Image (cartoon, rainbow, N blue to C red; front, side):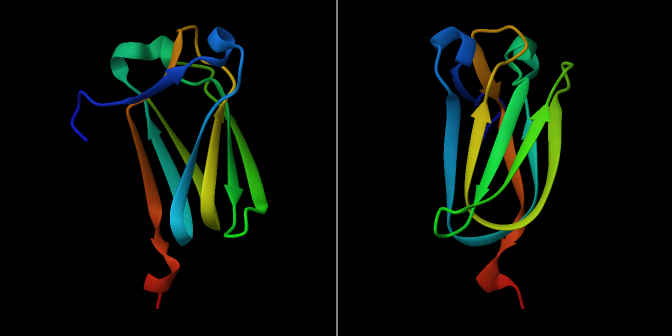
Length: 116
């Protein structure tokens, strides 16, 4: 992804519905951590109250992690250390903008079939 690209969606307060996206790793994946990097030009669009729901291969929720950005920090690092198949990111609000904007998501981990 180049530096001009980013992911965005309407802020929950703006559209009065839940703002979320779901990821499918397509197989069991040992997820060590997630790094979320926000766009420097849109500080008011940094997600504030958020959660990540971790699901197994059968869509059973393993764990929910809630996190908050109370300041305009350009990145968030979340330790997971779980075997996962699906992730659901939910954004409840942001720091005042009309959108939720994320520049990059980085996943550290291994596909289970690759672990010796």
